[in-house]
Image (cartoon, rainbow over all chains, first blue to last red; front, side, top):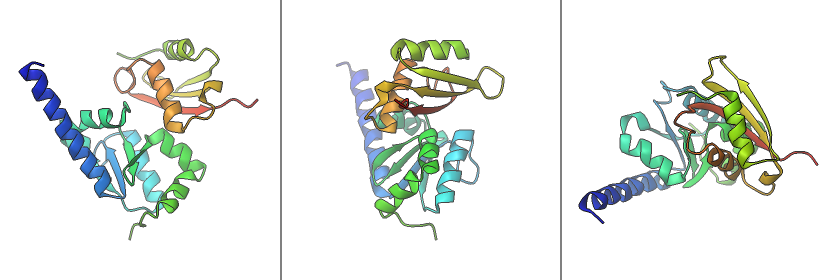
Amino acid sequence: MTKQELNESLAMSDVNQRISDIVNGHDVVLFMKGTPLFPQCGFSNRAVAILDHCGVAFESVDVLQDMEVRQGIKNFSDWPTIPQLYVKGEFVGGSDIMMEMFEAGELQQLLDDKQVAQAS
Amino acid sequence: MAMSAAEIEGMIRAALPDAQVTITDLAGDGDHYAAHVASASFAGMSRVQQHKLVYDALGGRMGGALHALQLTTAVPNS
């Protein structure tokens, strides 16, 4: 392994650890573009709207503010797009899956099953 | 680099020959699509696994050349 490869590998495990800490540190985490108040992408906007509709409190991470996380989150879940939803440390899906689950009543069921706190 | 609906459908069918693929050009700009893919290959898979199979078929273009592809998947009714 060259020094550059070693550095890249260390940086990657570092960002993986940061992401792991975030998804395990909160019941519900949405990695998105922009913020819940000002989403910067239609898909992120839709994801926020779905979570708001479920009345669930969630942590959001704006990947546009952190290029390492923006790329790292795709490797972390082996999922090519953002937004990404995590509940109790588990990857649930992107906005399409959130919408399918929401329409089928499965998202609310998952949040209930995992005993996720409602937004106050 | 945008992709045409025919390219998207072709790539999905190449990986999932039995798939029924319906592509809708949402904005008429060749850049925002919705795809519905029904395939027997999805049987027994989670939604995440089903979507990953389609993303794999698109060979890494998802999130790159294809920014806006709304995807829904289903197992065909037997």
